[in-house]
Length: 265
Ligand SMILES: Cc1cc2nc3c(=O)[nH]c(=O)nc-3n(C[C@H](O)[C@H](O)[C@H](O)COP(=O)(O)OP(=O)(O)OC[C@H]3O[C@@H](n4cnc5c(N)ncnc54)[C@H](O)[C@@H]3O)c2cc1C
Ligand code: FES
Image: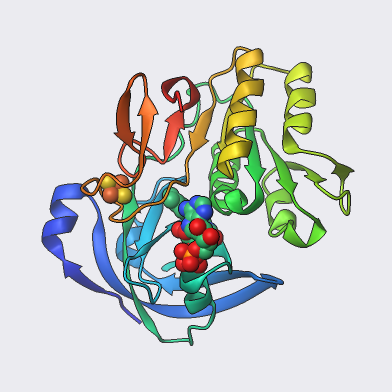
């Protein structure tokens, strides 16, 4: 099935494409977690790991979703069902069509020196952005390790998949898998072993703040992916701003991946 390009103008001016994409497959990964796969070759050809799309989700506004993986012409999004949009997506049938606008924002930048290991630090559904990052980094020859913190064993989705691209260490709030505790404990231990690593982070805001604090203690500038509320996703509504060096920046355009030393609140 071929997706239909709706707006060539948008594609030209912002390097993004608004398409109508058919659902190819919905895979349930565990209670409340799904991966929805859509046919979207026009978007796939321009994706950098860490970028996102805005997707029609049965709500008034499109919803932002990180690119989880790509396979041939198909693009996958991993999500946890928490509200109207994610519930809508989880109930789609094969062949149903949704609008997808992307790829959007800035992804992660791999270090120039391939000897520098890449350390991925994920909290909760923040893991959704990392399978493609881990796979591409490992294919490029980087050593990759993922530290994954989740509430419980049931929330450790796609852990097996991440092991194909490198090492994986998990920690849970309730101790049901791995150690009991927070991902910052794994990060501190890891940086004590080697602080010459490129740190990529994605997760809920309190976790991001804690991770940045640990990185600061080690003198490390991390690349942090922010999941602020977004309305338009391409820079016009200002609903997604965060403070950076005294001025406001849009996480949908200047991010979602930003250097930790650029973000003050
Ligand atoms: C750049 C970016 C990438 C994202 N990638 C993913 C992804 O890969 N997988 C995924 O599951 N979600 C992702 N999200 C969040 C996603 O866009 C939706 O907001 C979320 O899935 C809830 O949508 P909903 O319509 O089901 O819930 P809603 O009905 O909108 O909300 C349900 C509850 O979740 C809270 N909530 C909604 N959105 C957010 C948010 N962004 N931050 C904090 N709390 C929120 C609401 O306040 C409410 O309490 C991303 C967000 C951004 C900005
Ligand atoms: S979401 Fe509209 S400017 Fe960022």
